[in-house]
Image (cartoon, rainbow, N blue to C red):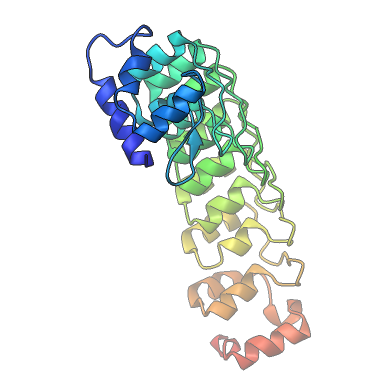
Length: 300
């Protein structure tokens, strides 16, 4: 069966009356295709059996139900003995799906049944990462209230705050900070949420992060500050400079924010930055030649 077939099948089961742990297996059995029914039977109709879709997704019935928001099935499966922290082929638990798809009721049921709120998937993302990325504030707050680590880092070093910032959800950013999220958290490349906000041209989040203590002059592994990422974003650039950003801070290639403005031909940016730094004195000789050939220095 395809993934859509499984979800459609569970939808039909979820809508039937009187669903319980006493009939959940029989009702699902009547809806399965022969090959999937045979494989399930071979497992002894194990409620934690791993089903494989045509797209090679390997998952349990509880994963399917949590993803689709079928509360009746979730309750019946758990009462029958479904393992709430089972992994699918991506390492996700049912709680990951409930968080990602904003199914608050199912999230509550899973947590009350003992689900691990800090479970990792194959990318070391927790349910809170996925909820933050999806902008699901009620789910975010519910996870935090139940002990979710607001500073958990995935395999790239990203925290939920990185995710919320990159996705542009100011309300999630505020909720995470209120509960102890590090505003200057580094990912594996030493990028902070403020780097992400500046690059995304999100003025509200930039202000929120700075108001909560984010360092405007922090540099990533390439030596870039948030201002390097905001050189072509006028409002972000102005906020950063007003907050003390160094316009002459060079990255590992001896390249300052002003140099980006020159290369891109952003006259308004160049005008505001040039009063604080000179590209002719700060650029490496080779870079000056490159930009001159590109015809940008005539802007001065």
